[in-house]
Image 1: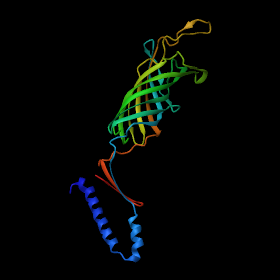
Image 2: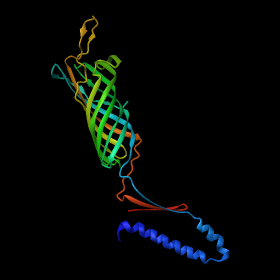
Image 3: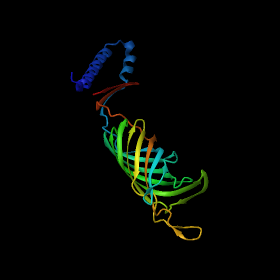
Length: 277
C-alpha cells in the first residue's frame, strides 16, 4: 500500500468504527442510555499539517568565542620578533542574529565582545603583554545542518571597534609598569578580520580568525621623559590569528527537520496519536 494513503485508510477505519459505535448505541437498553449519551459527548479531533522545512524568521543565539588562543606574526625593522602564544578566557561574549533560508543554508550577524592581543619578548629580559577589548559585528554564512544544528560550516568577515587598550611590561619576570587607555590611538580604531569554522550539537564550535591589518598604529606619537616626541610602534608590525572554542548558552532551540514532511494527529480526550507520512 502506498504510504501516502495510510492516513486516508486510518480515517476510513475510524469512520467505520464510529458507525459501528452508533449502531451499538441505538440498540442499548434504557438502563444504559445515560452511558451512551456520555460517550457521544467525548471529543474527537483530526488534524492534518506539514512540518516546516526550516526555522522561519530571525532567531537569536547567545554565547561567544570562549577559550581563545592567539598567535602573532611580529617583525621589528623587518626582523622577526620573538613572541609567545596568548591564552584567555575572559571576556569573550556575544549574540548572533540568524536567518535560515533552507535547512542547509543560512546567514548571521551579531554583536561580540572580544579580548584579543599578543605577548612579545623584544629582549631576553623584557616581556610585553598588549591587549585590546573590541566590539565586533560579524557577517557570515552557514552551510550544513543549519536548522538541526548537528553539524555545519560557517565563514565570513567581521569589523571590530577597539575600545580599551592595556599594556603590561615585565623585566626579568617582574611587572614594572602597566596602563590602559580607552579608545587608544596605539592601535587602529577599526580592525577588520576574516573567520571560518565548524559548529556541532549542542552548540559548541571551533573557529579560526585572522586580522590582516597591523595590530599597532605606526603613526602613534607620544613623549619620553625629556618631552621629546617618539613613535614607539613606527617600525613594528604584528598580525594576529586566533583559534577559539565557541559556545552557545541559550537560544539554540534547534529542531530536526523530519524526513516525512506531513503529519496527521488524532486526539480523543487525553489520548493523542500521530502519524507521519
